[in-house]
Amino acid sequence: MQAAEVLLPTDPVRALYFCQQAVEKSEKALLAFHGVTYRKTHSLVELAGQCIPLAPALSELLERAETLTDWAV
Image (tube, rainbow, N blue to C red):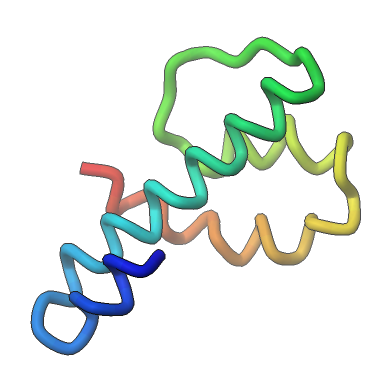
């Protein structure tokens, strides 16, 4: 997230990539912590679908972050 903050004023596309990566890695960490297997994907929609039942309090935040999926590559 720090890289995204630094890049945002000069390179917003790259900043969005780093934001997407931060969300993706966080979702995968949550799933791993709970011992849930997930397929290899960059889809924040798919990962959020698995995370929300484990952490319903995060549902609004994860759903808002789903729009970052397009910036995965």
